[in-house]
Image (cartoon, rainbow, N blue to C red):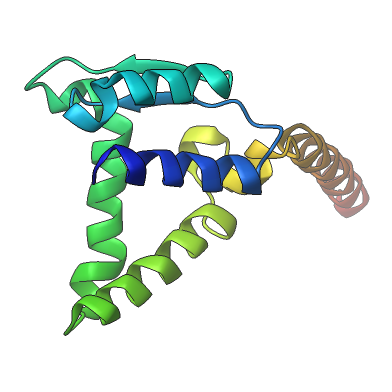
Length: 144
């Protein structure tokens, strides 16, 4: 990936989610340290954090995502070509972002979290749990 590729990825993300202003976390690759990339980040009002050199743990979330991606798509599907691998990864990333519930963010999908639906989802869960508790208490009160 070169500097232009990195900018394209960020631009596409910003087009898809214009209200988002993510913190861009990268390693110290040359594509992320050049003046053009710094200007690009500034123009779009983003913040850029670079991880420590030769220390992948400082970017643990991305490392974990790569592990999950391999375990959830590449290893079980065994793509036989680059095109097949792209298809498999694209499908998995779609599932990962829009369907899979993530324990680290309260069993909500990243897309729901990004658009701010997490608060209403959690409130709805709490409401349902409270109703279930009342029904359980009523059930056991009637049984005794």
